[in-house]
Image (tube, rainbow, N blue to C red; front, side):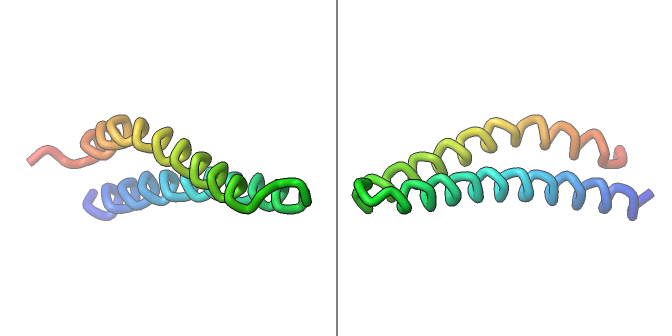
Length: 78
């Protein structure tokens, strides 16, 4: 039982991290696309990149309560 709980916890956290990482990579891709546009100022690209990363973080912060509930449900009752 203990190993299953550990694996469930690890899987839950790993999935959360991967989702956040994919979101951040999307921000990076958008910034690269903007950098290829010669008319785009670097400061503006950096701002848009930072804004995108903040949106990713805010989106994923909203997921933490649900993730916490799933982790608690997977824990054995003491």
